[in-house]
Amino acid sequence: MAPSNLLRSTAKSAGRITPTFPVQTRYATAINSRRSIWDFLGGNKPQDQTPKEEKQVEADQEQQKSSTETQRLDTETSTTTTTTTQSSPNIIEQVQEVEEEILSTPSPNKTAEEQAFWPADLPLPSLRQYPYTLNRGTVTSVGLMDKTVRVSYQTREWDRKVRKYYPKTVTYLVHDPRNSLRQGDVIEFSSGAPRAPRVRHVVERIISPFGVAVEDRPAVLTREEREAEMVNKRMEKLVRKAGKVAAEEGVDVEKATRRVVESKEHIGRIRALVIERAAAEAQTNA
Image 1 (tube, one colour):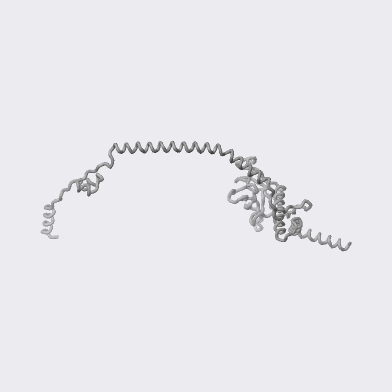
Image 2 (cartoon, rainbow, N blue to C red):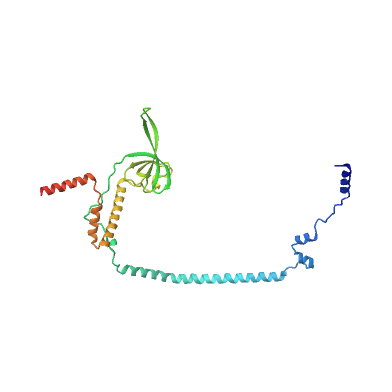
């Protein structure tokens, strides 16, 4: 830049005057005082909407209203309590009368399904017997499935190449009928009747409990109790089916029950062969 231009720029900057404004303008004071600009320009001063005396009168009126409402609610509650105390014995008497009428009235004719029963001369339904082995393991997971726990079983595996045993951990899903197992328990479980596609073992007893004592848990079912429960379930199922058959075909309930039980009775292959041979021998001897 030329020296002349530098001199001109410095002269202009020296002759420039910076205006001085007040710190707070009239408009800013109006905003800070929460007054509208139109009231400010018109010269109207802010006034309270209601004087102090009117405010006191309104407060007294509100207190009177609240007191009257509380008195009214107290009277209503007292009247309701008296009516309920008076009507409660009447309601109890009415309920008792209705129960007596229901018990005294003869029951309507039951359907064939409700009349179905297990004949006394019929033997109990047989269960298929599975060979089983007893193993010991530790419960590693509880609560993810209903009546099923995860158990780790420690065993050994023979390596034919090295010709040596190596430790191996196998995980089983074990059936727990009463949800009596806890994580960390050492139990004895057995293989047997399948409960699900992946559940083929059932707990037999708790060897060493972890955490909660055995007395504070539901009892573990024995093999006899489990078999009795399965027999009862099978009986109920066959009776329901016999009732449906009797209702559909219009046959006697007892006859339908006998027919269904005979058709659903499980007979093994060897037992069936023995029965056939015995029947054939009886016919030849006759």
